Image (cartoon, rainbow, N blue to C red; front, side, top):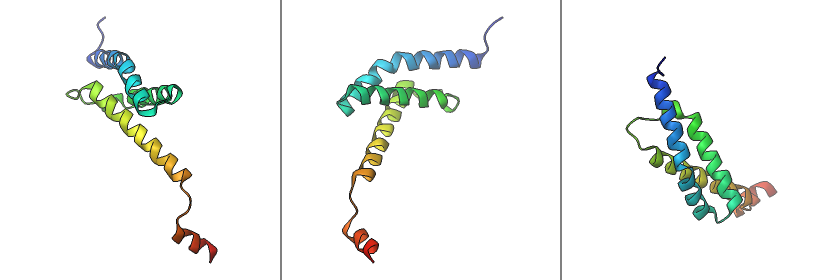
Length: 98
């Protein structure tokens, strides 16, 4: 019994994910300057890539795709933190006081 082409592609994608994990962690550590945050960012990126494996394009480098996912996840996290930590603006305070 030979594996199907889809199974072979899935195995290749899984191997590419595992091979890129160390590079992703290094980039995540550079971005976050924190080992715990870097691990979380790497894990989130790999999980998201695995969930979206059916949508992965054959002609796109897996490493490039993962680095873009990592960067986008990091930026979204920063935006969320800034929204939570920023105080209300002056105009918003006036509206709430009325």
